Length: 203
Image (cartoon, rainbow, N blue to C red; front, side):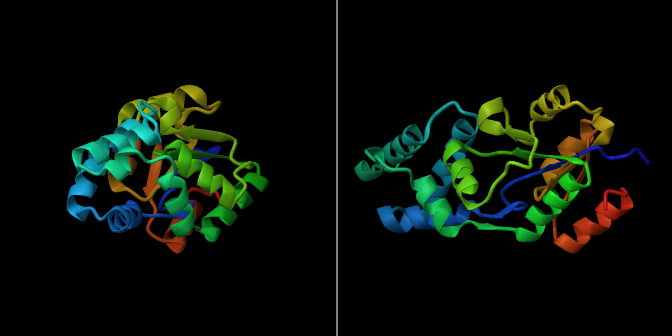
């Protein structure tokens, strides 16, 4: 088996505990919007903000216009930052694992579908300085599971793709990474992940 030189971690669902459903519930309650309609519009527009094509103000303006909410259309604060900070928590076992790998001399990085406000909120929760690579969709312009995001990673790391190991909680992202030649596993629990790391002689 090839030696793993670099481990890439997803953020939401791996490094931090977060679900978009929490955001949708809070926005629905605060602005008195039907949750199903809000959810549909949010997920329709999410790829635009997560690839850096629009900013947060534009996101809520578009959603507010579609749902006829002037309050949401004219919003002047970051809902993403406020709600993310309210609900998001660290997965300390994964933070500790990433630090342990870094101390062992294995390069660690982040590969995440995210946007600026949520990423900034995570940085307020914990230092991400030990992550040498930070592949963020809003900077790259592509989202997982789009193969283009993995091509970007392969082109911008100092290791061959065979020496990369990627951890994500979403099955389609894992399968897509594997199809591009990156060894990947779906994160289901810390103990299961440790077994996968032991198989690869990472720990």
